[in-house]
Amino acid sequence: MPRRKKSDKKKSPIAVSIIAVAIVILFLIRLYQVYEPLFGQNVFKNGIAGPLSIGWRLTSLGNALLSSVTYFALSLAGIVALIGFLRLQRWSWVLLMAWTGASLVISLVDYFYSRPNYAVMASNVIIAFALNIPDVQRIFGIRSKDGPSL
Image 1 (cartoon, rainbow, N blue to C red):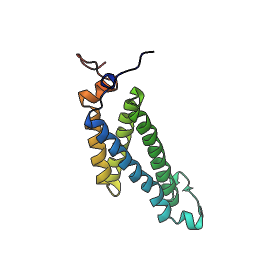
Image 2: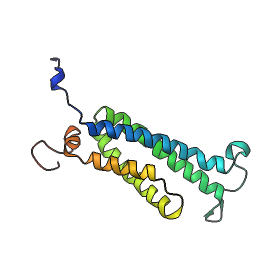
Image 3: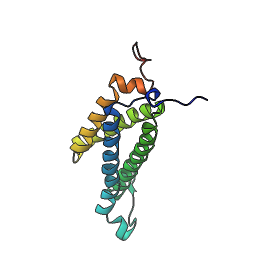
Protein backbone atom coordinates (compact mmCIF):
# COMPACT_ATOMS: atom_id res chain seq x y z
CA MET A 1 0.00 0.00 0.00
CA PRO A 2 1.53 3.35 -0.99
CA ARG A 3 2.27 5.84 1.72
CA ARG A 4 0.22 9.00 1.81
CA LYS A 5 1.89 12.35 1.70
CA LYS A 6 1.14 14.87 4.38
CA SER A 7 -0.66 16.97 1.80
CA ASP A 8 -2.96 14.03 0.93
CA LYS A 9 -4.31 13.74 4.45
CA LYS A 10 -7.61 15.33 5.33
CA LYS A 11 -7.09 18.78 6.72
CA SER A 12 -9.29 19.62 9.66
CA PRO A 13 -10.80 23.09 9.73
CA ILE A 14 -10.53 25.09 12.93
CA ALA A 15 -14.16 24.20 13.65
CA VAL A 16 -13.12 20.60 14.40
CA SER A 17 -10.71 21.83 17.07
CA ILE A 18 -13.34 24.17 18.51
CA ILE A 19 -15.83 21.30 18.69
CA ALA A 20 -13.28 19.05 20.41
CA VAL A 21 -12.53 21.70 23.04
CA ALA A 22 -16.25 22.32 23.58
CA ILE A 23 -16.83 18.58 24.04
CA VAL A 24 -14.12 18.41 26.71
CA ILE A 25 -15.64 21.42 28.50
CA LEU A 26 -19.10 19.86 28.35
CA PHE A 27 -17.73 16.56 29.62
CA LEU A 28 -16.24 18.27 32.66
CA ILE A 29 -19.45 20.18 33.35
CA ARG A 30 -21.57 17.05 32.95
CA LEU A 31 -19.21 15.12 35.21
CA TYR A 32 -19.70 17.77 37.89
CA GLN A 33 -23.47 17.47 37.35
CA VAL A 34 -23.22 13.72 38.02
CA TYR A 35 -21.89 14.27 41.54
CA GLU A 36 -23.58 17.54 42.55
CA PRO A 37 -27.09 16.13 43.26
CA LEU A 38 -25.59 13.18 45.13
CA PHE A 39 -23.63 15.51 47.41
CA GLY A 40 -26.81 17.52 47.97
CA GLN A 41 -28.59 14.38 49.19
CA ASN A 42 -25.55 13.25 51.26
CA VAL A 43 -25.43 9.95 49.36
CA PHE A 44 -21.66 9.67 49.78
CA LYS A 45 -21.93 10.28 53.51
CA ASN A 46 -25.10 8.32 54.40
CA GLY A 47 -25.57 6.01 51.44
CA ILE A 48 -29.02 5.50 49.93
CA ALA A 49 -30.93 5.96 53.15
CA GLY A 50 -34.53 6.22 52.13
CA PRO A 51 -37.04 5.32 49.48
CA LEU A 52 -36.43 6.33 45.87
CA SER A 53 -40.12 6.59 45.12
CA ILE A 54 -43.46 6.72 46.85
CA GLY A 55 -45.94 5.06 44.56
CA TRP A 56 -45.28 6.44 41.08
CA ARG A 57 -43.72 9.64 42.38
CA LEU A 58 -39.96 10.00 42.85
CA THR A 59 -38.63 11.30 46.13
CA SER A 60 -35.89 13.94 46.19
CA LEU A 61 -33.35 11.12 46.55
CA GLY A 62 -34.88 9.36 43.54
CA ASN A 63 -34.72 12.58 41.53
CA ALA A 64 -31.08 13.05 42.49
CA LEU A 65 -30.16 9.51 41.42
CA LEU A 66 -32.09 9.81 38.16
CA SER A 67 -30.40 13.13 37.43
CA SER A 68 -26.97 11.67 38.15
CA VAL A 69 -27.55 8.65 35.94
CA THR A 70 -28.76 10.87 33.08
CA TYR A 71 -25.73 13.14 33.30
CA PHE A 72 -23.42 10.12 33.57
CA ALA A 73 -24.87 8.67 30.36
CA LEU A 74 -24.37 12.03 28.63
CA SER A 75 -20.77 12.14 29.88
CA LEU A 76 -19.99 8.68 28.55
CA ALA A 77 -21.61 9.42 25.20
CA GLY A 78 -19.57 12.61 25.00
CA ILE A 79 -16.30 10.76 25.54
CA VAL A 80 -17.19 8.12 22.92
CA ALA A 81 -18.16 10.88 20.48
CA LEU A 82 -14.93 12.78 21.18
CA ILE A 83 -12.73 9.76 20.50
CA GLY A 84 -14.47 9.04 17.20
CA PHE A 85 -14.57 12.73 16.34
CA LEU A 86 -10.82 13.13 16.75
CA ARG A 87 -10.38 10.12 14.46
CA LEU A 88 -12.71 11.80 11.92
CA GLN A 89 -15.20 8.91 11.94
CA ARG A 90 -18.54 9.54 10.23
CA TRP A 91 -20.53 7.81 12.98
CA SER A 92 -19.06 10.22 15.52
CA TRP A 93 -20.55 13.20 13.66
CA VAL A 94 -23.97 11.55 13.80
CA LEU A 95 -23.54 10.59 17.47
CA LEU A 96 -22.34 14.08 18.32
CA MET A 97 -25.37 15.66 16.65
CA ALA A 98 -27.67 13.33 18.61
CA TRP A 99 -25.68 13.98 21.82
CA THR A 100 -25.88 17.74 21.28
CA GLY A 101 -29.62 17.54 20.63
CA ALA A 102 -30.23 15.50 23.78
CA SER A 103 -28.02 17.82 25.80
CA LEU A 104 -29.89 20.85 24.46
CA VAL A 105 -33.24 19.31 25.42
CA ILE A 106 -31.97 18.60 28.93
CA SER A 107 -30.58 22.15 29.15
CA LEU A 108 -33.93 23.59 28.08
CA VAL A 109 -35.78 21.49 30.66
CA ASP A 110 -33.31 22.74 33.28
CA TYR A 111 -33.89 26.28 32.06
CA PHE A 112 -37.64 26.09 32.55
CA TYR A 113 -37.87 23.86 35.65
CA SER A 114 -34.70 24.33 37.67
CA ARG A 115 -31.40 26.15 37.45
CA PRO A 116 -30.26 26.87 33.89
CA ASN A 117 -26.64 26.22 33.00
CA TYR A 118 -25.76 28.87 30.44
CA ALA A 119 -22.26 27.49 29.81
CA VAL A 120 -23.73 24.15 28.72
CA MET A 121 -26.35 25.85 26.59
CA ALA A 122 -23.77 28.07 24.88
CA SER A 123 -21.39 25.15 24.28
CA ASN A 124 -24.17 23.07 22.76
CA VAL A 125 -25.17 25.88 20.42
CA ILE A 126 -21.54 26.39 19.34
CA ILE A 127 -21.16 22.66 18.70
CA ALA A 128 -24.42 22.49 16.74
CA PHE A 129 -23.44 25.40 14.51
CA ALA A 130 -19.87 24.14 14.04
CA LEU A 131 -21.07 20.65 13.09
CA ASN A 132 -23.20 22.14 10.35
CA ILE A 133 -20.37 24.03 8.64
CA PRO A 134 -20.06 22.57 5.12
CA ASP A 135 -16.30 21.92 5.46
CA VAL A 136 -16.86 19.93 8.65
CA GLN A 137 -19.67 17.96 7.00
CA ARG A 138 -17.41 17.19 4.01
CA ILE A 139 -14.60 15.92 6.24
CA PHE A 140 -17.00 13.49 7.91
CA GLY A 141 -18.66 12.43 4.65
CA ILE A 142 -22.02 13.96 5.52
CA ARG A 143 -21.94 16.31 2.52
CA SER A 144 -20.41 15.64 -0.88
CA LYS A 145 -17.78 17.98 -2.34
CA ASP A 146 -19.85 19.55 -5.07
CA GLY A 147 -23.40 18.82 -4.12
CA PRO A 148 -25.98 18.95 -1.39
CA SER A 149 -26.06 16.69 1.62
CA LEU A 150 -25.78 12.95 1.01
